[in-house]
Amino acid sequence: MKPDHNLIWIVAMMLLVQLASFYLVKDLDWKWVIFWSYVFGSCLNHSMTLAIHEISHNFPFGHHKALWNRWFGMFANLSLGVPYSISFKRYHMDHHRYLGADKIDVDIPTDFEGWFFCTTFRKFVWVILQPLFYAFRPLFINPKPITYLEIINTVIQITFDIIIYYVFGVKSLVYMLAATLLGLGLHPISGHFIAEHYMFLKGHETYSYYGPLNLLTFNVGYHNEHHDF
Image (cartoon, rainbow, N blue to C red; front, top):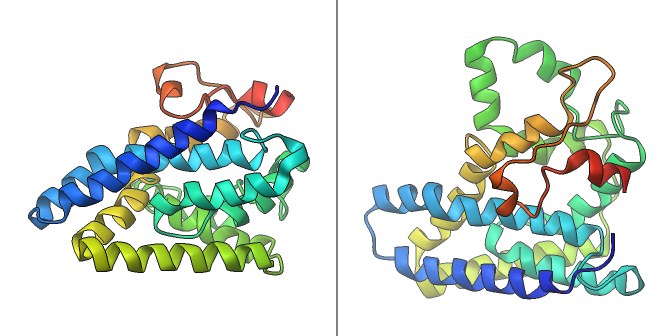
């Protein structure tokens, strides 16, 4: 309901922890790199995407300092390995204004997804690939012209990735990217993607979750409340 400056320190600490994990995995066997990316890094990176969700609503610095929030979103974005924050902000505002509207709200699966991923196995594949659908769906449904902030977000992120590769090596870079891909796909925390907006009951497009995973996800489970407020 109002800005929460604590978000600034929480995000900064999360990024520092992830940087420490880059150092800790740089000399591990590949199997342990992937293991820790799923068990630990994925939780942190998924949580960071939801911190970016909070930042997109200008919670760290308030609405009167909107650009400060955009820059802070790019800072939070660093641990993910792929540019995300600025583009997410643009499409997420449409999600709130036009909830459930076909060809505008890109959180809603396309007709093709609903038609093709209709068996248990195909749904399983769809969940694994969820981050890819989430990333590319806007380009097919409601493409927007690229803004200068998106270009800056991309340049900063690629520069950071190159630094991680140069300082820590390829294993740390793979750990970071795998943590994002695995953390947003077949992962317990990713249940909120399905729980929030898929129409299990006709006419009801938004649902809330009140369980303990809210502690890791900035209370994103309180989703009816979020859309109402």
